Length: 113
Image (spheres, rainbow, N blue to C red):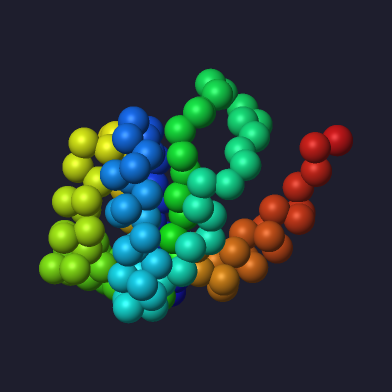
């Protein structure tokens, strides 16, 4: 089952952060991952506005996401962004398709009327 890494980033030194960004695509790819979103346009739909950078990375599994994060190559890359801002990375399992199909079927029996 797919897993996702959600990154919330506040960049204070773009030069250092850009250097870090140059290395991440190949490292993510080595673990079967890919960017789903990488700092694109954002619209706050509810709650307080978030002005930081959001990154969403898909991996084949939670284990692959963790292996990427703890890999020696990524540890080196992380050092490039030291002092470039603050970051929070969270890895989360995806929602199984079978569970989604059941939830949709159950939900369709309800009405807001």
